[in-house]
Image (cartoon, rainbow, N blue to C red; front, side, top):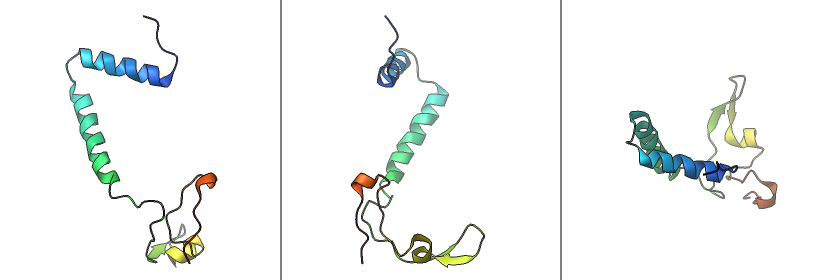
Length: 89
């Protein structure tokens, strides 16, 4: 069998080789961590969510607020410009 040249193919080969052998302690820890991260992801603010203005520290440890640090934009916005959302008034 010729090795795949795509990442998807290599991941499939990795999963197939892992399935052929007994699960290792390291992979068990990795799987548990991935499962925990999947649960935590449900608590992440979604695009368009309005965030409350709150007190923060800036990079120099000076007091500021979320609105001051973000230019009055307090909604979660996508990082891709083509998917941008207008800030909430």
